[in-house]
Every structure is written in structure tokens, then in C-alpha cells.
Length: 228
Image (cartoon, rainbow, N blue to C red):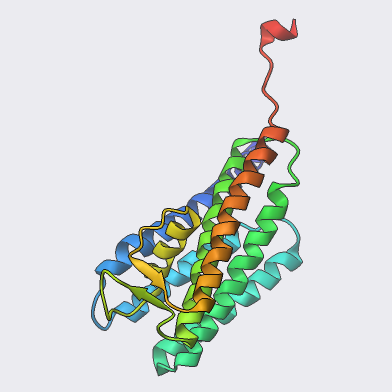
């Protein structure tokens, strides 16, 4: 009985971590825009922690991989908390730098695991979508670093003069990744435009490579009458 429950948990645990990643992203995008006042910074820190923690939890395999991700995650959250207490701008940039490192590390690991799979399963599909989400989040962190170090790199034309925050960059990152191009947020510098082009290429190439990989490894199940 215990062995059966353990095997069942092992089979569903990866899917739960991917669902957790989706849920934490949804919380950040839905709840944070409605938060105002003194509690905004602390609320963002909590949601930001949940998001990075959910990303780290998707790692499977060697202990060293998890340790590196956890150390980067801890550094990001520590610097974020220090920024909330002191208001020093360089600490915010540092938190986004470590967040980018964490997300990129997890993304690369899942990408490698995804393309090493021998058979397409439901877990493979969950993993593929999670990699797409992590790519968008990684680029959002990169944009946040650029804006923090060089203010004015991006401009929201729908809200002139409004500050760019991380949820806004998440929105912009996924719009760019999906090549929708609404045009409400505009890269204003050559550095910003270069990064945007790189994200567009990342999104297009990932989808092309992913589809070819999934088609190549797809093995339809045979019916009983065909086996006979």
C-alpha cells in the first residue's frame, strides 16, 4: 500500500510543481496590480518569492543542481528584502540579477531534460509549457535589470511617465515572446531593442524546435485489435 502510494506520488509530483509555477505567476499578475499603498513592496516580495520558489521546485535530478538554484534563489530574496528595508537602488538591481540567474538556470535544466526525453507523455507537455513560461520570466528579469540600471530604457506609451515595475515587464515579455507586438510598451534605447530582438528569436526558435522534437518522439499507442 505504501509503495503504491509512493509510486503514485512520484508520478504526479512533477505535474504539481508545474501547476505551482503557473499558479504563482497568475497570483503575481492578478493580485499585484490591485495592491497600493505601503504594503505594495512587501506584497510584491511575497509574490516574487513564491514565483521563484515555484520555479526552483521544478528541478528534478542531481542535488548539486538544486543547491545552485537554491543559493541563487536565497541571494535574490535576501537582496530583495534588503531593498525593501533600505530603498537602495543597487539592491533592487542585484535582486533581479540573482532572479535572472535562478530562472535561467532552471530554464536551461528543464530545456535539456525536455529534449533528452525518449517518449512524449503528459508530463513532457507540462514541462514544455513550463519552459516557455520560464523563458518569459527570465527575459522579464533581464528587462527589469536594464531599466533599473538605465532608467528610461522602456516607456509605457499608454501611461506616460509611469514607472515600470516587474509585473509590467512580465506582461511585456510574454507579449514579445509571443510576437504579438501591441506597441503600448516601447524599447527606447539600442540596448533595449537588442534584447527585445533576442527574446523574439528565442520564442520563435523554441516553438519551432519544440514542435519538431515532440513530433519526432511521438509514439502513438496501438489499439488492441491492431496488436492482434
